[in-house]
Image (cartoon, rainbow, N blue to C red):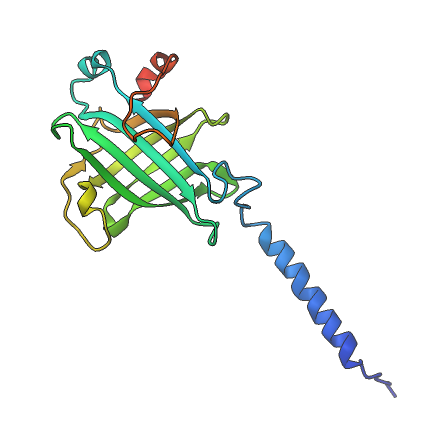
Length: 199
């Protein structure tokens, strides 16, 4: 005859807690910690910018972007959310700043340097590849709907300009910038020439 010994409730409860703890730890291995492994710490604004020289524009006659800045900020409360905002001054926009906002997520698991970013209200998307030392980022345009500042709000599906990903508006190499400056201020780019083939 098989004897079954009853398991006290306290032991069953502690066993359940242990199992749930182990499952939680295993699950967290698949979530990139926002502050330890991400180059975009929670609550910190990080910016990349570029003003293209006349020489660059003349050598890329199809490019319509005169200057661009890309801002990132990770939420404090919901640290897995990485928000972005693109500021752009186009050659044919009469010096008027246009913009687009949305959110990003990692394109590949365990790769915090490569992002897929989507503009709100189905306004297009782009990928962004951050250089390992954080000095620059390569934006690969997949079509971005740009609006004037007063129009940048949810549920407004009208764009002042749609940035088509043509051959010379496909990639943009942007450099680490001071977020305290005006978005499209001129920045010093002593080593920008070596990236000329990447936008």
